[in-house]
Length: 228
Image 1 (cartoon, rainbow, N blue to C red):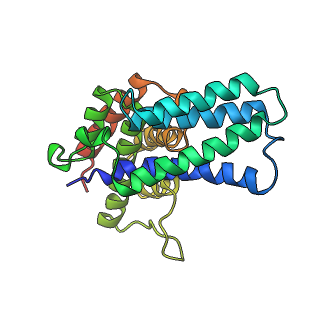
Image 2 (cartoon, rainbow, N blue to C red; image 1 turned 90 degrees about the horizontal axis):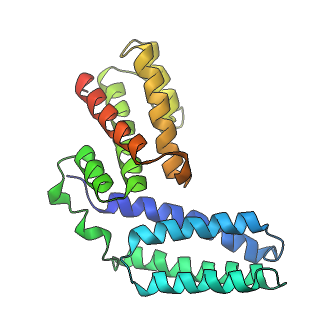
Image 3 (cartoon, rainbow, N blue to C red; image 1 turned 180 degrees about the vertical axis):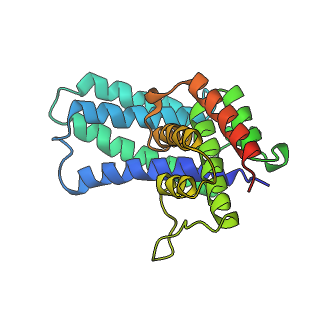
């Protein structure tokens, strides 16, 4: 049974990546030398993630809006970038703590293990509720897990010499090279993994809800046609 922590782990991963960037800027004295575009992208990613984690009008969303509004008022002043970076860093720290302590109350109503038999149902439900990015990550994870299962059942290499999993793109190529499936399927998987990677790395503008719906339908059909 799929656990709700699968999705929270994805959010946690993204937020920790953002905070690492912010911490790097602070520790290396770059706060006032970061480009406006970079700051805009970082704050946009935080807004996107937080809006999916908390219901309106949650105090965290209100506070984040205040941080960004205040920055917009002073962004051309010398201390503007430093203000945004330090406050975003503290804010994201608090969100990370909420996730780790299980205090977030928005997604749990949607993601209960007993509501889903598998990743596909979870992804469909998330998409229907407007969480296209989480849906893309989850269905992409199901594809990656299925590719590894196909490797195991067909005695195809999926680990490197150190015992670590190969990249999904290489696993896909390995399965195709021994004719587990054809060239058309191999190319389709390449495009599916691309959308999944966009979602996992926060490039949310690279795809829309229709792309994710096609992703779910295509992967569901692939898993049915090529069971492990």
